[in-house]
Structure formats: C-alpha cells, structure tokens
Amino acid sequence: MTYLITFACYGSHLHGDASGSVDRAHNQPGSPVLEADAKRVKTESRQMDQPPYALDRTRRDTVLAALIERCHERRWTLLAAHVRTSHVHMVVDAEADPERVMNDLKSYASRCLNQAHLDDPSRKRWARHGSTRWLWEPEHVAAAIRYVIDEQGDAMAVFESPT
Image (spheres, rainbow, N blue to C red):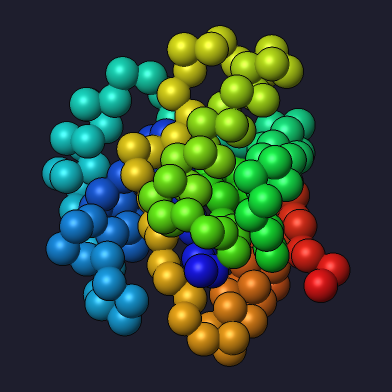
C-alpha cells in the first residue's frame, strides 16, 4: 500500500492556531479544519513541557537522510519526502500499517538526530501523532507526490524517487 504521511514538530501546530490545524473531529479529507481559537492555543501551550521544536538546515538534512536510510532498510519504497522547518511530508509504499511506518520513521529520525549530537536526547521533537492517508489509485499517488515536492513553498530537504 502507498501512504501520504505527515507529522509535525513538537509544538509547531497547536490545535486552534491560525494554521488551520486538525483534531479527531476535523481530520477527514475535504472536511473543514479547526477555526482559530486563541483560548485553545493558550491551553495547549501551557501543557507543553518544552519549547516548540524547529528543524534548521542541518536537522532537516539529517531527518531526510534518516527517512531514506530507514525505508531502504525496511524495504519500503520512499517515493517522495519534504522535510520542512515545522513538519515532514512523505509518500511511502510499504507492506506495513501506516501507523507503524510513521512511528518507525519518527523514531529512527530522532535516533539519527541524537547520534549527530544536535539536541539533548530527551528533547521532544515530534507531535504525538500525525496524518496517515491511504492512496488507493495511481493518480492519487501522483497527486500526493506533486503535493509533497511542489506545493510546500520553497524547497528545503527534498527527495523524489527517480522511478
């Protein structure tokens, strides 16, 4: 199966912020995103026990290399990835549940960041969950790849499979 997987950096997209975040009631394709809610943002911000995490160029490159390496090790096909300052998008073909793929890649990226001594190992880097969408049709896969590669603003740390 092929999936579009997205996960955010810790504290970068709080429920109710102006970015149009999602929650359990607002996470289906085509459904409206959350309305801005300053009170909810303030509540969530108070619950954070570390400052928000952001990926600079070195961290983005480290995360991208980790995604490529781990997909190769697991024999998953990474079709596209874009590591941004505040989040990661990827299109992955894998014979595994999308939650497992996402969690494995987040863990491995953290391990590689730890090995590079870029942060304290206790640093929270990723939001608790993320988005996993099944891509059933070839045209959906192609659209997701274009979204990841071309529709994220200026290119940061980007991978597109040559196949």
